[in-house]
Length: 314
Picture 1 (cartoon, one colour):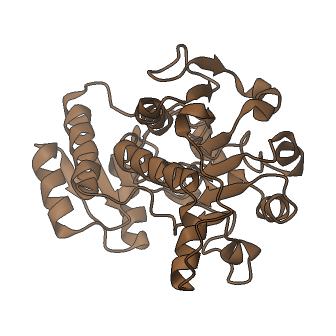
Picture 2 (spheres, helix red, strand yellow; picture 1 turned 180 degrees about the vertical axis):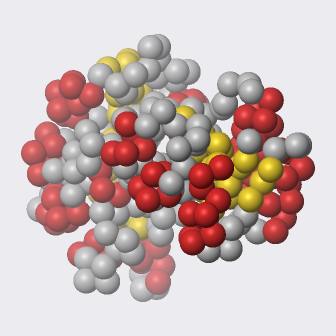
């Protein structure tokens, strides 16, 4: 049994993985060509695969992805194969939930406009739309680890919370109503804040287009910390410019980096953060911890953690 680490990781990672693997051989190729030569004996793989590498690895049983999102990891041959795919689920739940609350409260207190006035040395407390979170209805799209943690933390402020998820069997703490995605369009007119926590999948790609934005309240806010390609950038720019919705707080975008000529940069009702909602203490240790736990499980023949549904991309 052998385990391949490719693409390359740090020497510290490789040493820790070798220790966790026990008697299992661990190969850390220095190039893709070396990875291809190691593939025929590989039964486990840490990192990413290409179709060519998968074809060269007939004994492969497990792939540990280096990310939570899997749209850049999965491909048809991998989906059709018997390889078990695991991801980095849950390592960012708390950090991203904190980021969501920061974005929500910033909008509730009109901080985007106030920051711009600060830069202009403009003392003007007038014409502000301050909101009480307790008066709001939040719609959270996606109730995985991140969405569930957003709901749990947001519930402290007293809003009504509606969760939309294709698989959740019960409402997590804080969620007062649970619905399936086929009801999303009907639920949008009820929401004061729409929070996208969903993964990118074939079903969610381009989901928020002009039709869905027109279903939202003109006073509603959109927060997206899921995946950028869930929201059509042109539709979002138009929705904000023409007042279909009241504002947005965005950490991810259909095109990244966000183009310098995007209208979003200049909108005073928009908060932009550069795909960093997951930044926080201990994430590197958590990421390595997931890998080492699964290496030990794999070496011992035990069930793996964080097994993903390859066809669903999460």
